[in-house]
Length: 115
Image (cartoon, rainbow, N blue to C red; front, top):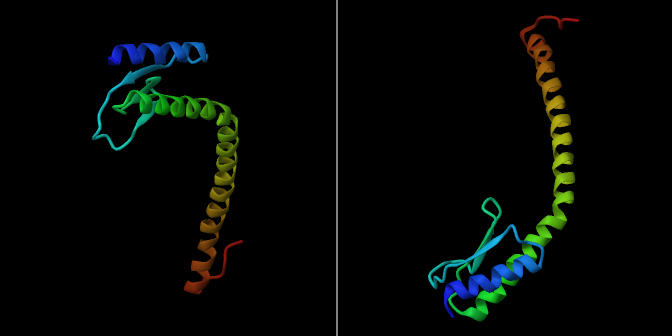
């Protein structure tokens, strides 16, 4: 089968699955270290398998991955917000510690701590 025919069928499948913003490029390359990949920045699924049957398997894998990525997005946002909050907390603690070092250095030099 020609690449254009396979791509056309895969792209039609994307439309039927509600992923019509995405497109497929079949780029058969047996030397490629991966079978395929989804490129979210370009909304493109690249398939590198040479065999048509293998290409469909890879296509399905990438479609499932895209769908899961979308479904898991709220959890990724939540985790990132938690990390951001804890980072702010840790930065505050670090700043307080650094500021307290002035007293430590003053005591080490023999000066009374400033109050």
